[in-house]
Amino acid sequence: MWTRDQQAARAAKELQDGFYVNLGIGMPTLVANFIPEGVDVTLQSENGMLGMGPFPFAGEEDPDLINAGKQTITELDRTSYFSSTDSFAMIRGGHIDLSILGAMEVADNGDIANWMIPGKMVKGMGGAMDLVAGVKKIIVLMEHNAKDGSAKFKTACTLPLTGKGVVDMVISELAVLARPAKGAPFRLIELAPGIDLDMLKGRTEGHFEA
Amino acid sequence: MANKLYPDAKAALDGLLFDGMTIMSGGFGLCGIPEKLIAALRDAGVKDLTVISNNAGVDGFGLGQLLETRQIAKMISSYVGENKEFERQYLAGELQLEFNPQGTLAERIRAGGAGIPGFYTKTGVGTLVAEGKEHKDFATASGTETYILETGLVADVSIVKAWKADPYGNLIFRKTSRNFNPMMATAGKVTVVEVEELVPAGTFDPDHIHTPGVFVQRLFVGRDYEKRIEQRTVRQREPA
Image (cartoon, rainbow over all chains, first blue to last red; front, side, top):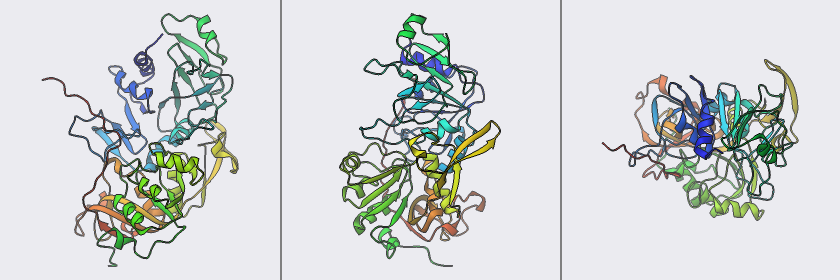
């Protein structure tokens, strides 16, 4: 089984040299700590920045410089700033290579639900619907099962969708499931250490090819 | 030259406000919000507002101040976490809320300001966002895909925060505080802008202006900006 850091490091292996990447809030932000040596990626923040740097040193925080999670950050020598429309032109126009997002549910047809639980206070979808609709490749980084033990990779999402048929890869603490093209079935790509196929199947509801 | 300069937020909003009006308010989180104009709206007491803003501020700051005074009837936003009073009013049915995907919201404002009444987008297809909207298939490089019709947005007044302005209303924004401000400047019937610094005419390199003055009707210099930080994150210095 992978730890959260190992899960993030596994996702970082999907980064390719030259990629423009948008990382979602939460576990996906950890991926930035594991970018492989020799791989140069530019991080996009949907509030209007390309070329996101690390957190500032204490005392150097700038309230005019935050990421989409509203955290203080820094700029790099490659950084550019732009408006929200330019930012989403990058996202919706297919100019961003990869987005790594969290999810509450993913279905084996690639549907994703990550913004709303009916009956609970809904905070909003932010940029998630734009990202899954427009970015070239979508990787979901999530826990394999919900707190009640139910599988999060399902035959069908039960929660309101963020996007239909959009997910390309799921990385959980147990395994990597991926498909070569939208519309193709998911396949098992890799098992975490100590996990075998039967264990994985026992904790998964959605269909995948072994 | 028409005078666009006003002494303060109160003066800059004079004669523009009425109950039931629609206001666009710039910013992302608390970054780049027109904090002086929001405070002036609170002091003016104008009610039943529809506010178009990516977020709804936090308790006690930004648009949270207009929620506390119950001046907002409806929000059009993409994300409204971090605000308990918002949650309370919404769950009690006292506040209407329309969620838009963030890119759709930005593009609706851009379209409204550019005189475009609607556009088709893939964002939200197959979700609650698409319900009741016109669907249309278009041929694309990757085959036929379905899109939904989204409409342009305009406001009675847009309130905008920029870094610097000149007397003509040409604006320059700073870092990620630009966000929704430039589009909102284009989509207000009247656009009122607060800046940290007013520079003499001719100071800006015309190639560096982000928002041309035609979009700006009223302008003032704000004092003592609070610029509250929502999530202060820092890293440790490596030991020497």
